[in-house]
Image (cartoon, rainbow, N blue to C red; front, side):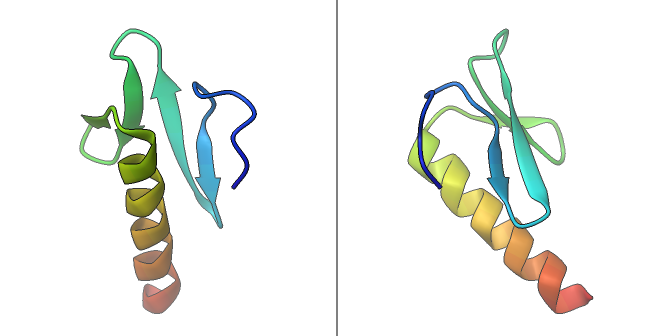
Length: 55
């Protein structure tokens, strides 16, 4: 992942975490918000790994 814009959506494989301007963070399943870019990246990678293992 390259960071061109710190407020961009995070996409890892088929998982996308959308940036919410209102909540100032990335929204992931369960409508929880992560405000730390690096933590959001790790969560996206983990969600992608779990999704691939389930397939």
